[in-house]
Amino acid sequence: MPLTAILVSAGAFFSALGGGLLALRAARQVGLIIAVGAGIRIGAAFFDLIPEAVHHLGDSLDAAMLSTAVGFLAFYSIEKLTALHVGHETATELEHGESAHRHVGLIGASGMSLHSFLDGVALAAGLTVGGGLGLVIAAVVIIHRFSDGVGIVSLLLASRFPRAQALRWVLYVAIAPVIGVIAGLIVPIPEEALGVMLGVFAGFFLYIGAAELLPEAHRSDRSRLVVLATLAGVLAIYVFSLWAGEIAGPFA
Image (cartoon, helix red, strand yellow):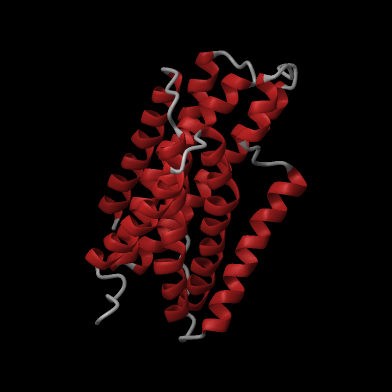
């Protein structure tokens, strides 16, 4: 498990760094990348995290869905009440003359770093379970870190941050899931608590995918390809989950 954690953490780090460097090179077409990442997160919540939470909670669907609802609403409340994560809608406003509000970019970057850290904790939980779930969450975290690297640079450049400072924040976002994995693996987790955590992180994945990534994808690219990219992301994680043995096929 330690070797797996090191490899996945390294993959997440370089994925975020690659996304940030791509954005620094002024890539214009990022909507489809974000849409695929959203689909992958949503699919992982439905096909992997929630079923695994049910298993660890004594096959109690009610308890798993309650945990998922708590996770979704908790992350929604934290974001809206504390403005920890500022989306690109704000970045768009800044591009139209609100460049003085540099603190918005700083708060948004801090929020992205926090959610990257929580991704690392979720990955540690998946590695604790082992088997296919660890593979699925690893894929989700690595792929989504790329879109986070793109997102944080877009936000900071729109906030008129220097390119060098934007790159430093990309490094923070890249290292945050590594710290989350270490923290999650150090603290032992009882099975029932692990089930609750998986349910909570399912809610987190659903919120990030549906409430943050999809709106941003449609703002970045208004073509119908965004819908297809989202569905492709969901289908990709479903097929990957079948391959990893995390879920059974429809005819099993």
